[in-house]
Image (cartoon, rainbow, N blue to C red; front, side, top):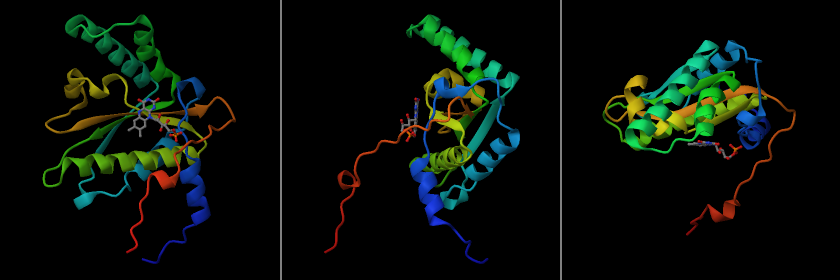
Length: 200
Ligand SMILES: Cc1cc2nc3c(=O)[nH]c(=O)nc-3n(C[C@H](O)[C@H](O)[C@H](O)COP(=O)(O)O)c2cc1C
């Protein structure tokens, strides 16, 4: 295969310009076309993966599915408070119920573990798939973010997502059209604080 004709300026622009946008910035009741979501998932599939285990799995909630997912996580939040004595706040319950419906699509990110490579590599590969989703969403000018709230760390939720053994629910990728033309400012520490060069 011939080397593709990459455009480094565009690559830099999308990597550095990619931003998270949250539910408050979502344009409600104006769904993104499924074909764009399919493109986002197609790009997820091309993340690097050690031994080609391709550990990512996705569940896409949209339409009535968002309502169902909201009800599911709100009910579980309440049940946990009743059964485990975890805190219960009416406002949090309402957010679990309502937030998914403010998105166009919510994608559950699952890591399905294969034998033979360290867990860290499977988590990393899945996170790289999510980065591809983020970049593709931003390139479409969409509002999107990776959230690790709700059922992400709830043990009781594991069977509902078909998780076994060392499989992990890695959170939810929320996607919507943005309610604003403004794009968030990025903020990062300087590279000097993150890099050591050894030259001799
Ligand atoms: C693994 C992971 C989990 C995250 N979980 C949350 C979350 O639960 N809630 C949230 O508001 N943002 C979450 N984020 C998004 C970050 O808040 C966001 O990436 C950060 O503020 C930097 O902003 P930027 O993405 O626009 O560069 C998560 C990001 C990653 C990589």
